[in-house]
Length: 569
Image (spheres, one colour):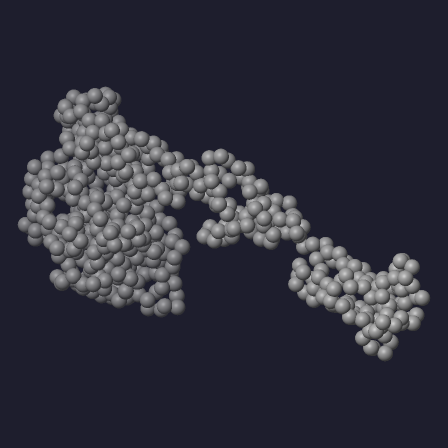
């Protein structure tokens, strides 16, 4: 069994209905004005009791895209503002505080009597369920139902109900778990279903006053919760079959059925089966007022089988949809809604964006596409004429071909500009951190081992960063050379005692002592050599003790050495 629920809705009104909708059905005022709220409880037997209430903070929450931007649900990762909707607002119904709570919002409206080609409410939804071990009636639940105001009763069909035990296709395991609120020391897996669609058919209720209700409730045991996000888009046609209106010059038409059904069957005027996909392409367009019938069969628990009728209508309207391929940078994405994408098209077109030719899946965020590929733009004129064109999106991040240089030995340095294949169309900058925020000044004379970063930028402003590993070997060991004898007889050969240093070592001092430990010579200059005298008098033949103090200039460590030297006269 599964648990709790997040759902986004888009109600699609007919052109007639859409023009006569009361204010704020799409929350365009950023409020729930015109909507009614309810709150209540679910008891241990699964009985739901809710009553009218005022809007309660954290249980009926209006979100604005201007405020939350692309903020996403923490379990499913999808945005809280429906990407397939037409507005900038959504409402969250319920919250993550369990305790047997229930919430509802409802809206009352007339179904147009003249909607002869059918009338429906279609919603996009994404669901998230925690996974408690409950019986079906005990599960958190979301319900979408329709009330016939004139007859004072709920209609049996349509009636949609999603519970934690719903056997719906397409679920994925979330990488986030949620606490059981009756025992916070335990957590349960969470499953989510990405954006999908379902349709409520109201064709049998034309001319009636109806009420659509959305309800969420926690589990009956009080430990698991459910909530929903709702986004109403009143601007779209309620006719469930679209694409029936075409324009002069079109060589074919494609009838498009509503999304989210298990099975599709298209029938011609004479009831012959002519297709079994969501969309039906017809070459060439048939005569005006040719009718087709679409029978849709929903997934289990997602509504009732329905038949939708449509008629082919040719418009004299001549319009042109022009689409331009786009290039961009992965880090900023491409905005498919930008005017440059459809520059040259007939003014006033309404655009929708899809990821596949069947037009089943909307682009999640058409203002920031971040994957290369082919996308589909549907342009619709006010007359209803529509056309689809493809737009190719290509991202061109700079390609940096780097290689780690051979190790160098101190005091040699490494030049980072020699560690990649340079291209004239790119500019390069150098950094000490992977985020490329700390510039590297001495990039041409690197004298320390480590990982360094090269950022390349192309003419579009696209950037990519790669790393280079630099290894600087320490210098060879220093050498201290000290003679063990010298002959201070003024013959010009080995007359003085001194020390020779090679490598990275600094001379600080040398002291010489006789057998009695008396200091007989001291100097702080390596060029100051001992002549074998003490206080101007020659010392006798014998052995003397020396002590050297220096500094290893690479490791910055003191060096002390000692030994014996003999005077031979």
